[in-house]
Image 1: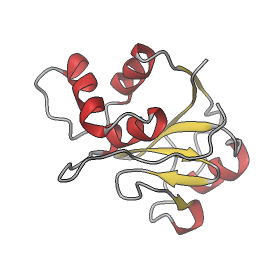
Image 2: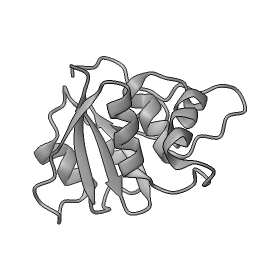
Image 3: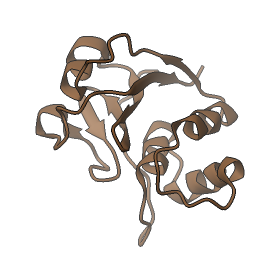
Length: 137
């Protein structure tokens, strides 16, 4: 999936956790809508942790496809962006305790809803735990 813009779509007063923010950035759906979709799988548990399997189910529900692209478990986020990620693709990435989107060599998450260069990202040296290329067929 080629993208020209990727940002978190939120509403005034919304407090987006990382997974809803990442799904919003990937799909263009507002965070409150994404949270409702997550709740369909999560139930009454709080949306305060990294629930990547549920995020992948929500993407599937929305018609998105994904594939695991992490081949080197020792890659830092910066290394992943420069060595693995294609700049014209979008990736759902998990680092310890956090989910984010990588696209166009930028990081989009709940702290950087409009994206920030990976070189300026505060946890750019964190190891990537899981990474999935995401696209809409």
